[in-house]
Amino acid sequence: MNVQDDTLQPVDSGKRYIQLEKQYTGHPLLAELDSLHRQYQRLERRLNKIARIGDLMQAQIMDLNSELDKRAKTDPLTGLFNRGGLYPQMFALKKQLELNHSCFGVLLLDLDYFKEVNDQFGHLQGDHLLISVAAILQSICSTQGVCARWGGEEFLILMPDCSEKSLHAMAENIMQAIRSVPLPGNDERYLSASIGVYFCREAEMIDDSIRKADLAMYKAKAQGRDQLVTYSPELGETKVVL
Image (cartoon, rainbow, N blue to C red; front, side):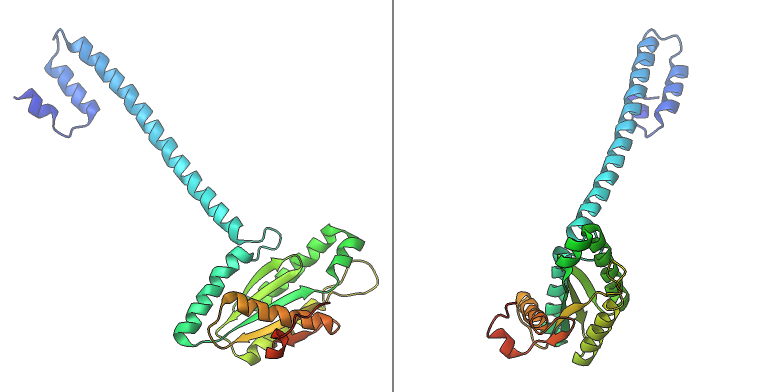
């Protein structure tokens, strides 16, 4: 039997050592072989431990990356998309519009007199209102549109592959639902919002679509708030200033 060839066979190390121990019983080098075998076992245990730690660290890194990606795209207060999460959705809609000539709508919503609410009742109460509005938007738009907290008390809603009529219907539903949210205090006052509506029929820069909805929203605020205004070309000629 050729010992070198036999040693190269893919045999379990423990079984292989038992075979060698039986084969070379009484050999003067058996004690050294036993010492080397114990060293090998220690190294093997350490290697397995390192491998397990490596697998655990890799899983933790993946979870951390997933959490960081979520935080980069999500508003922590409301759970809606933030700007970072919404822009990829808008670019996808723009691409779809270019390829299929499908239309989409943009609603830009600003809560009326929200600064006064924060000043009078505190930011914690203001946060509760923002969460309530986010829940309304998710309920109304969950199967049709994409919602984001655009910043402060502003929210932006994308409605893909829609008609102008369905876009206005959604805006009206949102406005009515927000009017049912009571303000803090006991004087039976309710929240309201100004909404800018823009219906995109042809491919254009994403920022242009948002700017047009923004102009319509500022027009709604300038006209007395608690209403919606649809973008028209004349709004693009001058910026509405409150």
